[in-house]
Amino acid sequence: MFITFEGIDGSGKSTQALRLAEHLRSVGRDVVLTREPGGSPGAEEIRRLVLEGDPDRWSAETEILLFTAARRDHLERVIEPALAAGKIVISDRFADSTRMYQGLSRGDLRAVVDKLHALMIGREPDLTFVIDMDPDTGLARAKSRNGTEERFEDFGADLQHRMREGFLALATEFPGRCRVIDGNRPPDTVAADIAAVADKALA
Ligand code: ADP
Ligand code: TYD
Image 1 (tube, rainbow, N blue to C red):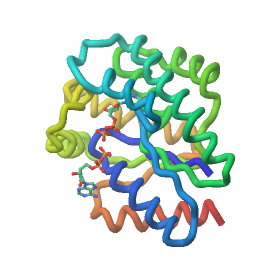
Image 2 (image 1 turned 45 degrees about the vertical axis):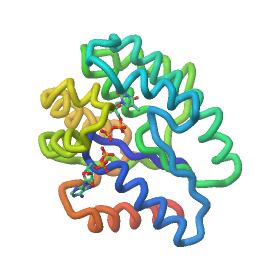
Image 3 (image 1 turned 120 degrees about the horizontal axis):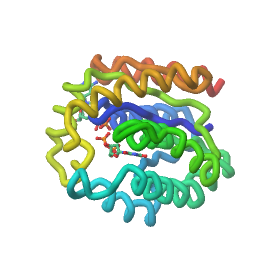
Image 4 (image 1 turned 135 degrees about the vertical axis):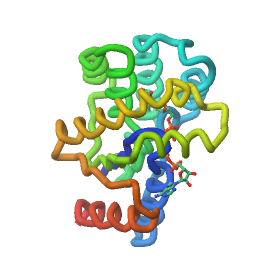
């Protein structure tokens, strides 16, 4: 079982991915918790290239290549071996993030993203939690972390608003695997909803 978390910056993905991993481990499941961009040593090196520096450091086209290169390494070295060993893999972001951020942020490059995905990745999650969140609240939370990985947050509120709409449309496009979760609630409430959906999917 391959589970992903998607949504805008600051929507609570990392918090909820960890909560779900803890829940599944508590019921005896073997879980690998990972993230993108990154998740393998090579992909973590690419992470620094894409998340730090000026927003105009890379074009959207170059970003598609960098994020896909990172994903291919993560898939080969972490995700596929874990799934083959019968583990549950939970990834904080995956290909849907490229469909949104590179596919929609600077013109319509969705078809290019999908072509490269088919060629180099060719795998979708079994279950995707799309955490929905007010974009201004999400951006404020993300900004309050005050780190160096702010390149996408520096694109500003307009991008967050478009990404939120994009993720909701994506959930409609892939209804079989996507579940929209209301992230504007206390973490425990959100975690309980997610655990119930995951338990049902695993049963
Ligand atoms: P993401 O991975 O989507 O960027 P995080 O899980 O890192 O989001 O959460 C961003 C910030 O918001 C963190 O400081 C976290 O503690 C806080 N947070 C997460 N979930 C909630 C929630 N349901 N209500 C209030 N604050 C939250
Ligand atoms: P992440 O560390 O998940 O940030 P956050 O916790 O703020 O959500 O991801 C960092 C940024 O990388 C985020 O703004 C979205 C962007 N991103 C892409 O643009 N394309 C991708 O394929 C992925 C995986 C992430």
